[in-house]
Length: 79
View 1 (cartoon, rainbow, N blue to C red):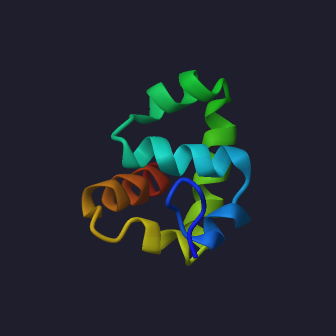
View 2 (cartoon, rainbow, N blue to C red):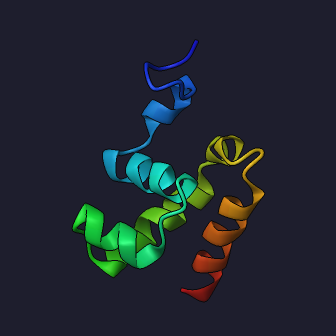
């Protein structure tokens, strides 16, 4: 079953901020753009990104979106 946005059910296990970060990353937004758009601190962004990395099922959202996954992983490694 999918959510109304066409996302898998486990997508709802994420916090609102984490969902928004994933969606914006998948749409090609950069870190500064996401921070500004969500009105969060850089530290909050980093914490949420780290939590996303540790949430295995989020990786499935990036299937077929290798560039986005690589970008998320690079940002985590640079933190």
